[in-house]
Length: 105
Image (tube, rainbow, N blue to C red; front, top):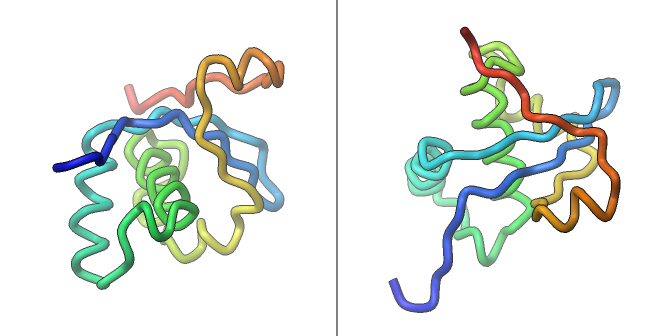
């Protein structure tokens, strides 16, 4: 894969009219990105990092039950005001009150 470095980022999301949320993405979210990107002929994550992060946050939110399974990506994208990949240092430095979103039990 050359110099491509992939990980499953923790993402902080601010949406219009909703509480801020932090989501931990997983391989399932990355695979869904790959499949969807190819289907829609979207650019790769290096060419469109905000599209990538927004999509991953939507996929993680659906997977964890933070939003209903029928919540469309288009709606999520239109409501998202800011999306940021977090490192442990970022969360500590910012003093973010985010916690992981619980998944369905």
